[in-house]
Length: 104
Image (cartoon, rainbow, N blue to C red; front, side, top):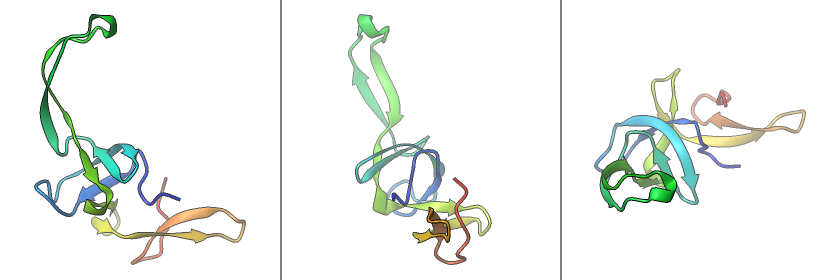
């Protein structure tokens, strides 16, 4: 079970974007794409088949999973996550500090 999934609110804990928060757009292996974090400019060619104009496009670059933590709104900070199996057999993610279940 992945500790960080698409749609989670995360906070960057290391690197040039340290302290920024955002929503996970997608997870690609050990890297995540977070909305409005680690923005880079790319020169793109026009593609008429995909109705894509050319020019300089600003988009999110990936960040390694080790540099982000799941954001806990109750504690208002990033926290570590582990998994726990409930009595009915379901696996859920829980915050390590408080033990409360992550709403997902």
